[in-house]
Image (cartoon, rainbow, N blue to C red; front, top):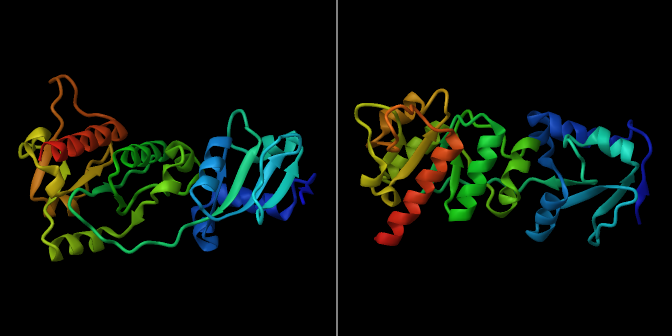
Length: 253
């Protein structure tokens, strides 16, 4: 049975706003919000725990058994949603249980990717190529509203592992996993000459690059060949090139 909510002060709506606004609150509650028809459909399709659906009162949308259904007028949906044109569907989801770090050759490590749009796009691209992703220190929250939207559902299909840089480097050393970092340096080699499927590959932020901790531990440094007048690529674009090369080389091996 659906519940009609007409007040901005409703507790569930306040909870939804806090989930979208506060990383700390999300992890305290182990919950997050997914806004938009496509994202909600993906959350339901891939079996993610959806506790409640907040729906525009006149919108036809199938609500699975056991999921709380809250209906709100269009004015409240516009107030709640952060989309420029709200689609009238918002889900309150449970975060998946954290997975332990389990590095393998061919993993992608993201280091300090702070832009939610870039992070979401990288997670979406990695999902398309079937490459596992680990988030090191300094990354945006994969369950932030902007990141979730940019993943286009990838965060539901293959949630990234989050781990401290120190833990990642310790596991690389213990498992004798060579670290390859993308870098603009005199040591950097053409990406096409490196067998990425035998390494873990680290991509840093566009502004700061890879952190000193990963640079110091790197066995190889890689650069994407570009025309001389171009200095760098957007982090999400660079990740797409790296992921393509990783899968291409696997196909050749």
